[in-house]
Length: 236
Image (cartoon, helix red, strand yellow):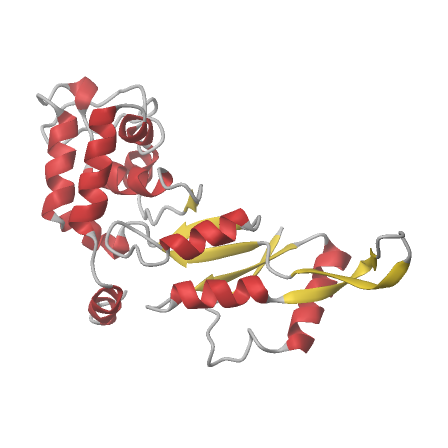
């Protein structure tokens, strides 16, 4: 039950239009929806912070003074959630997402694999090989699992969308949380039926935390470069 404004920008005027804000709030009251927005581009952090400022008149509540006397309509935050591009390459929005979470907003992450670009990064591949250990089935760990687990490990407690387009990709992605249902063959042709999850491995031990830090520091790009490179991608 989420009604989401798609790709909000400063240029569209959506963040400044109080009539639209109030109409969205009425939709929330009438339909029981949550109201969210998605953001894109190198200024995602600025957009999130602007969205956090937007308040609407709550038609179901009233403010009270210290003597419990009604003094006027109560104002509440419009947006309940934000959907943002964040991954091991594009990390600029992290602090703004922390602020959104602290304000009670749900955080949804899109493009967690950077449209596949993250999977080619040498640092990610190195950590994935390290986590794979000696290559036994019980240590199988693919780059997509590490990349998604690194996002899930962030303190703003995100939900992460999978960009999978095949059943095999989806099963592999799920290994970021749990290996228990992964039965695809790994690159060595061995069946990987595993327990535990990559996120847990990255956050529960000192070795894992060091690998998480290695990924986040070694893969980070300048935001402008990330988005400039993205515009050069060929889309289906």
